[in-house]
Length: 213
Length: 213
DNA sequence: TATATATCGATATTCTTTTATCGATATATA
DNA sequence: TATATATCGATAAAAGAATATCGATATATA
Image: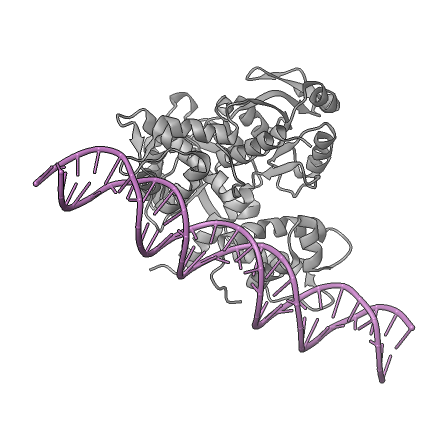
């Protein structure tokens, strides 16, 4: 089907649907309604229907959607069906945790190599992925036509690593350092901002604790 | 100052300002304008001004804001100045990485204990934090009046852990498992949804690669 | 001292996102 | 076969968020 431009909010909800649908696909029913999805995920049913209409053309009155078809449609829309190779820079605690996680292939992501400046890490293999020195980063990215970079270095070094990645032809960066990164507008910077979550948690608590019922 | 109700979007931007301001506070100038903050973070200046007006009453024409005062105001607004104790459940790779990170005190978060079902982990200390068996979770939370729970268990067990935390009086949950969690509406569930980020990365790439200039 | 300028805060406007409404349709049941 | 109902898709309305505009003000400069 033909995709129109889809909002960030919608794209962000799609993995949630996907996740729920995959859990349901093991069940007995082959169909599911937008109403049910909405209820299970705490969303509005019209919103779910609208989101799904952008990625799928299933959906029959009184019946709903075919679960497996919907899973395929969402995965295809998000581009999960063709795998992208990625590199990870910064083999600290978080970097190691990401390297050790084997579930990324579900999202079409394949981390093929890791980089660090720490001499003692170089040559190590983590979950089968080798650690290279940082000065090999650009060469490897260019040679393997890497399009995704994952940044798990400390804040200070993040912009520098970002620059190297951009110059190496990387087109999307998943950034875990709590800094704003500057990059050309055609390169997507997706920051995993844990500080945002912490802010929301903290704010919620300080409000609750200041005015208890 | 008196706080009105502030949108999630605004709260999410505040840590970004905070982060930038902290970097600037080491510099030579004591003042900063909303225009500069906006430019540095790729935002609209009116938006920055509006956000800041909700948490601070500084801001003088031609001068801008006092950096250090603004830092205090934001931290106070977010509740970072009083520390909340938290427990972490699920000592896998990610759980370990979070336990090992020592920067959470900056956000008023103090992880005081970890829990797991894996016998071999129990009694271990990670970054000074001890791992207890899961059946001690409720007791410890109640006794120490823990208000924050961090969930880093596999999806299957997440709802169960969530239920235990809720029954233990926890009021805010930071969830890293990629599932929707059900909880009473007065308990905040903040899901760190890495699948969202991956969806955006993947979608960006598949769009770029399908229509290259 | 008068004028120019950077900046703020407030109000107005535009844009985006969410939610509500309503007719159409596929199935189940009387 | 007729009727009731769950559901869809499309359009309309409402709510919310981002951006633009404008007067006020504090400082710097002529």
